[in-house]
Amino acid sequence: MIVIEDLRKSYGERVALDGVSLTVPKGQLFAYLGPNGAGKSTTIRILTGLTKRSGGRASLDGCDIEADALAARRRSGLVPQQTNLDNDLSVGENLDIHGRLFDMRRGERQDRIAEVLAYVELADRRDQTVRTLSGGMKRRVMIARALMHRPAILFLDEPTAGLDAQIRRRIWALIKRIRQDGTTIFLTTHHIEEAEFLAERVAFLDQGRIVVIDSPANLINRVGAWAVDVLGEEDMETEYFATRAEADHGIRGRDGSVTIRRVNLEDAFLAMTGRKV
Amino acid sequence: MRPLLAVYLREMLLLRRRFWRVCLGMSVSPVLYVIAFGYALGAGSPVGGLRYLDFLIPGLVAMSSMTQAYGVSSEINIARFYAHIFEEFQAAPLTNLSFVTGEVMAGITRAGLSTVLIVAIGAAFGVTMHCGPLFWVAVVLNAFVFASLAVWSAMVVKSHADQALLANFVITPMAFLGGTFFPLERLPGWSQRILDLVPLTHAARAIRAEALGGAAAASDYALLVVLGAAAFFIALRSVDAARE
Figure 1: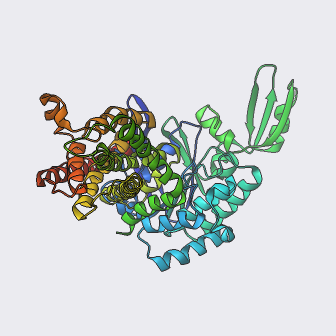
Figure 2: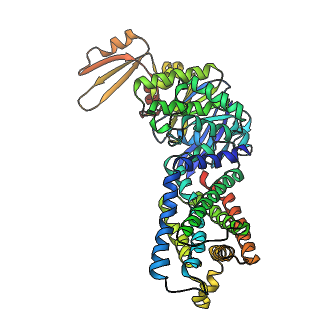
Figure 3: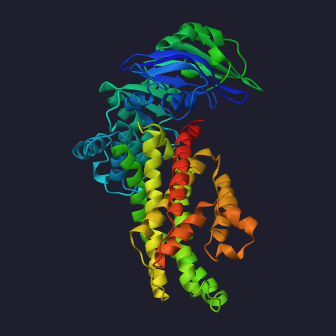
């Protein structure tokens, strides 16, 4: 369980997080959605001990992230946005060092390395140098590494950034499987479809503040079921309707190129923040 | 203990991967110094009744163990600013004590390796040193001081460029003025008093005395212990600065 209360972070004059409060129940897959610079990574960095908070409180499974920092870190696993594997070491060595950092015994480490590599379908890559892996494989190794010490909470910071659509789907399937195994997942993304496909609850974050927290379906329903995009000469206007019939009625007599489509999370974000993700 | 060893083991695995490259890198400067200063410049200038080369090689041990121990700052910087592996340490239940100790041990190991290489280079040039226990104690203490300073500097700098600047202003002057290439007695009294505050001066003195079969002053060891402890303490306090 993750509890965040009035979390704040400033870098000099710049406010990165402006009083964020939320709770993620045990076992939930929670997505943190917002544009670049909204404060998503800052939140994860604070929760995982990479950055100090300026104010507020947070705890992971009841352990305060600063007063009880080591216990909090034992309960969490992190897959950061940037690849941070030792390129000159093998996949197995990277995982072994992680296991040692989390005080795992030798036998336990060896068994777990085999287990997590099988889990991410990279069992045959154990002795391969990380440098020789593809981007998607490296990301899966990072997920395997974060799972090594069996964390109760997994932080995924933009886990599919820079990956092609096929690899992204594979990572999504993996994340779903981790969630089904009972791990609480806190995911940041600016891929709308990622949050929509994976998350049970979504927070919209804008300029360091949470705008709304709800399930993807409820957030979409707040806006409507159908969207009509009308492409004018200079910009595109979008209107939302509760039913298809209303949407059909709404486009009658409109000039320009008109498209009717289902409302998605991006529409919800745009409607609630006035900006795109 | 395991988290501490994880930090050390990672550095050792990387060292093993690049072993021959590292050894070559550690050997180039000493060989050039031996040729340039030992033969070309100092061939006809005995120091205190010694051949200049016999004076120079122990000084090179002090200098090289200092620079190699301080070299862990570059490894940490690469891990921190480029490869982002440092985040793996920050997110782990790793105490500051374990992190600093692991990195300092890595610095001491690098210094030990460079010392072995210089002893071998010295032997190749006809200089035989007495490498008794107190010789190695002096090398380890010297490396302890500078590896601790390296961790501190790697934690407080904001970029790799800052780190290089710090090395240029602190390590390079020390390398040339800390009793490596010439006896400090040849300098004016005021500069001798300043250089007496520099850890490398005491390390060079102790290493040279032991290498030449004499006995080093206990005060040199004591000062290195005090400076090393102070640097280690500062390094411990600086780790949290990198979380900003």
